Every structure is written in C-alpha cells, then in structure tokens.
Length: 190
Ligand SMILES: [Fe+2]
Image 1 (tube, rainbow, N blue to C red):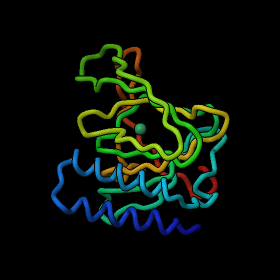
Image 2: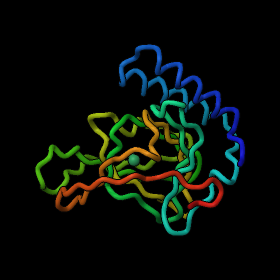
Image 3: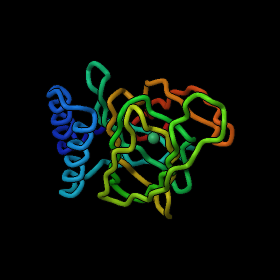
C-alpha cells in the first residue's frame, strides 16, 4: 500500500487538533479550508494509486480515517465526464482541487416534501481552490469532472464518509434514497 504524503498526514493531525478545540462548525470548516488552501498552494505529490480513475464511476480513496470515525481525508477521483448523483453528506465537508476541474451544482436542502429540488447555483473549481462544500444544514449538490482530464480532489469530512449512510435525490421529483459511497481499493479504483 502506498504511503500518504507527509503533508497530508500533518494536515490531518492539525484538523483533528482543531476538532478538539471547541470551535463551532463554521469556525472549524473555515480554518480547515484555509489550511487546505495553504497545503495545496505549497504543493505535494499524491502517489498514482490515489489518483487512478475507475473507467466506470468516480471513486474515493481513503487518505486518513480517524480511529473513532468522526473525521476523514479522501482523494476523490472523477474520470473524464464522470459525475455523482445529487447527494447529501449528513456532515460538514471541505473540498480542495488537486488536479483537473470540478463543477458543482448546488441545491436547497429538501425539507421532506416530495417536489423538484431547487437549484441555488453552479460553480467550477480549479486546482488550488478550496470550498466548504457542505455543512450539516446545507449539503446537497451534484458534482462532475469538467474538462478533458480526470479531476482529483482532497475531501475532508466530519465522518468516515466511505461508510456513512447518506441521502441521494432524484432532482426532478425530490424522491430520496439512502446509499453508502464505500472506499475504493487503493490503486485499482474498485
Ligand atoms: Fe459531495
């Protein structure tokens, strides 16, 4: 198994320290966003096993998972043209782009009534850019690789995202269903 970059290991340690320091979710995610921005700006090499697309669907590789499962850092890889369903996260999340380009379409979080989801915006993220992609109260979006090369993102979540049950939505009807994204085997996409 490939080792994760020391820059990511140190970043994960700093994040865990921040999580124990009594910050609000807004303060915590803002600090993690700024930290990840600095890490990406300084640069590091993510080994190929963590950047390998699967030809059939996007994949998430674990870079770091806390012992108690309340935090993780992932390498999320979208092959050219691949996309997620419209989905939520059930936790906070911070996403920074390592390579490629990702476009995100955001929606209002449904309140339970079955009706078409309401779009609230669309943003394209480029290498080095970082966003607080989701908070506990506002976490519904759809993401795709936007460009002619795969997109690799560093994703940070307040849960073990590969094992967390979360919602996906039919944007036309608002119908929701539950899924687990699962972790891909490192290097082979899964
Ligand atoms: Fe997402």
